[in-house]
Amino acid sequence: MTFKVVITDYEFDELDYEEKVFAESGLDINFVKAQCRTEQEVIDVAKDADAVINQYAPLNAVVLNELGNCKVISRYGVGVDTIDLDVAKQKGITVCNVPDYGIEEVSNHAVALLMAWSRKIVELNNSVKNGIWDFSISPPVYRFTDRVFAVIGFGKIPRRVVEKVQPLGFSLVGYDPFVSAEEMKKYGVKKVDLKEAITKSDVISLHVPLIKDTYHLINRGNVNELKDGVFILNTARGPIIETEALIEGLRTGKIAGAALDVVEFEPIPKDHELLDFSNVYITPHSAFYSVEAVEELRTKAARNVVEVLLGLAPTYQVV
Image (cartoon, rainbow, N blue to C red; front, side, top):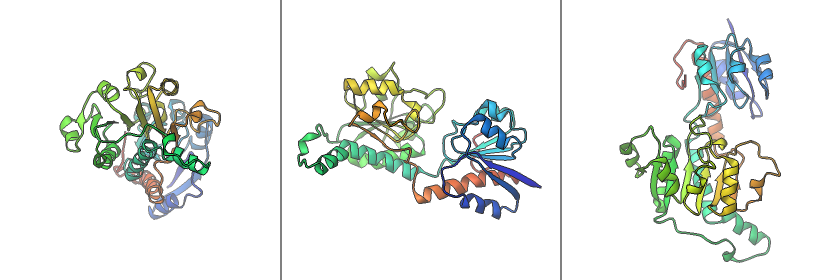
């Protein structure tokens, strides 16, 4: 039996890791490579597919209801916000992700952004290259000792983040309704509610999945409750922050700065107002990246498909 496996979209130069997994599986696989951007493009190429590998192309209810033969969807990444999980479950489609491939990379990126912004590395570097040798152009710079660092979400990545920032002297707090105070205490983190996390913290680092309850978690309704001069760090998903609320907070000085690996609409337009703020650092959704992480991500995403097509319980099943 030949299985049709469709990759809806990808950012890689080649797909040799995926092809290797399929070749070693013993299955007869027709691997169809596409670069879909719209619902109809996905439907046209995947309507008869046995399996789908997905990066960013939409797999919403409209699309899933047209996939008459699909047994499994495997997503490149941790988040599954491109997929309508309720419809997938109704149709009996197994959804998988790769939840453990970029823990070191994302946590390192978060800490790197924190350090670069806190020490004003970019501004000072740029000023020196423009002929200005003056440390005083970028105040204020504060010690980390006794300043409060909050993680919103307490999964694998934020746990590594707090392990890495704890030696810097921060007081650590965390918010996650699904993690106990006892579990957080093991990492030196005090569990607090969301309001305390965002009103009492000097640094807020976001690490939650994008779901209905976390969409615009930082928004017009609560941005004025933030501690004056807060620094916001987002290596999770862009829409967790309402962009206009962030901009307003930056304008008023309520928010001293932000470091964003993700933005609400990607890629960010070159004339977007966020790019005008020197106290905002933006990287192009690159926190996940290392050579090793990409190989792991792609290999495991393909293995998810193979496991389901072989009738096995997938290692990384979401629904």
